[in-house]
Image (cartoon, rainbow, N blue to C red; front, side, top):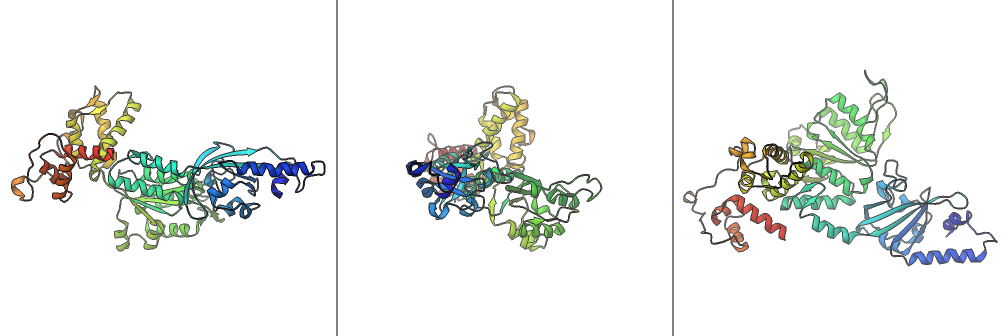
Length: 473
C-alpha cells in the first residue's frame, strides 16, 4: 500500500489532516477493486507496480505481494504485461498515447498460454506530480479459441484454405503466438511465404512493434550489408548521412529475411554472428548497436541439401530453422482453389469496379486440372487476365489465359480402366454420397484421380464435393 499511498497523497503516510478516514478510504478502495471481474494493474512512470487486484492475480498467476513495488518487466518478462504495445516500449505502439485497447498473447506464471484484452489508460498526476498507468485486462482465451475454430475454416492472416495442409499451417501460426523462436518458412515461389510471416508477427506479443521485410536475393553483397546493418556518414561514396539498417528498424519487432537461401557464403558468417549476439556495427561505424529482434526467414530452396553440399552453413541453418513451416504448392491443395478464386474476385471487384460474381463450371474445371507451377501468384494473374476479358458477371472458360484453355501444365491424364485392373468404373445413380466417396478413396489408396474414375465423375466434381463436405464439418 505504500506506493499506492504515495501516488494518492504524495507521501508514504497520509498527513494528520487526512487522518484515519483517508487510510480507511484507501483500504475500502482496494477491497472494491477486488470485486471487479476485470484484472487491474497500476504502475508508475518507472514501471513500478503499486496496485493489483484479485482478478489480475487470477489472470497472470502472480500473487500481488510478489509483484507490488517491482518493475513490470521483472514480473512479466521480457516487455511487461503489454509486450511491444506498452507505452514505455522504445519501439512499441505506446498504447496510452495511441490506441488504448488491444489483444495480446500472454503466458501466465504457471505456463498457461492465454489471450488477454488490454485497455491502457494514463492516470492523472498524484498530489506530488507522480503519474501512473492503468491496465485493465480481461481473459478472452476461450473467446479467441472459438473465434479461431470458426476462422480456420475460411481464412487466417489474409490467407484462405480449408485443406488439411493449410489448417496445419494455421495451427502452427497460432501455437507460435507466445514464443519468440526463429521460424523458417519453406515453399515454392508464389505460395505466400510473406503472408505467413506477417501473420506470425501480427499474432505475437511483438504485434505492436515493426515488421520489416528484406529480400536477401535481390541485393548485391555490399548493398545488402548496408541495408541490414546500416551505415555511418562517409562510410562509402554516396553515404551523405547516417542510415539505420533493417535490424535496427525492426528493434522490438520482427525481421523477415526472404530468399535467405541466396545469401553469399561470406555474408552467412557475418549474419550468424549478429544472430548469436544481436549486436552489430554499422558499415563504417565503431559503436556496436544492440537490438531485440525476432527472425523469420523464408526460402524456396532445399537448405538441407545445400548444407550437405557445403553451400549453406549448418550452424546458420540451425540458428534460423528452430520452427519449420512448410507451405504446400497450389496443385496439392485443390480443395482450397474455389476459396482462393473468390478471394481474388473480391479484390478484382474492389480494384476494377467490375461486378464479376462467379466462375462457370467449365472454367472451374480448367482451374482445377491446371498444375499451377506459379502457385497462388499465377492464379491471381490468371483471374485478373480473365476479369479484363469478362464483360458480364461470370468468368467463362474462354476468358482464361491460353495456357489454361489449351491444357498445358495440366495434371497428367487419367489412366484408362482397361489398362489398370485395379480401377473399376461405378455406374453413378443420382448424386455422390459420403459413403460412396469414402469407399472409392479407400479402394484407391487416397488417390483422388483414381477415386474420381471409380466413381465415374470428373476430378473437378470430386474436388468440389470434398471441399463442400470439409466446409460443412
